[in-house]
Image 1 (tube, rainbow, N blue to C red):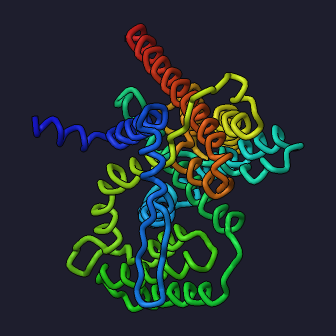
Image 2 (tube, one colour):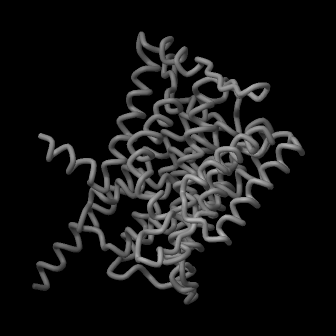
Image 3 (cartoon, rainbow, N blue to C red):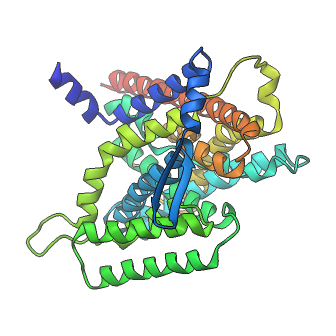
Length: 395
């Protein structure tokens, strides 16, 4: 039994399954007699205070502002590793996923804006369908196993990482509240301290984490979204191996955090943010501006943006087609790019802090992500069977 449990958690798709289970649990809780308990739990306030400095937030915001900073820290480490030695380390290798990601962010945002052009109250949500959920998208692809070329998995992973970087930039520029100059300067001082530590080749991870925690508080108080502190911390941690060949501090941090993030933080975020009451819900509710814009952006905009940009890039010689993949399989990956879930829900909390609009955001994200996951999996599964049939006929 223990061997099976260990094998499950080591599987590529395990994180996606746990995330899905958490989302389903949230939907069940919010549509059952447990609904009041679910809402009350998320509204429970928790405080941390040292002298006159204190932070008092409901549990939901501790998850979204605090634990998600750790998730963004891990994302920052992944981006840094890919830029240093992975798919994004060369101009040629990075060209295709970067162009695909740009198309996959621009077209969904445009689709959302066009649908809500005459609804000024809905326009702040334009970036919600621009995001791709790495855990879910890669998890769905992993279920197909060897039926999908490894190059296609690397393409999706690189594309999703660039997409996350784009989401980070969007959050930093467009989703900040009124700025507090003193706290912003203190946060900048923290960034400077981290840069100096990196320059001096400080290898002790605890030193970076201590400065990073202080910087997180300053960023939280500054009005810039606190999760960006996690990204800044990640980019400061050394990525080069030690003189004795030992793993780098960045590698140690990434390996230590991965299970906690994928099996703890992300499922907890999904449980806290995916709950939407379906009481009295009608089909017509999905066609309101916000949910329709999000769902259409994720399901239609993403596939057009990613596939269209990829096709143009390959035809223009700006990138190489993933080895062993067909255009039909690339289109299947473009569909999986429409699984926005975690990042889309997160941006939704920033764009629409009003609880009255939160349900519409969740409805649109769930609908668009579900359609993308089912369509992408179905297309890739049938593509694999078609390829196997052709191979047998030729053999």
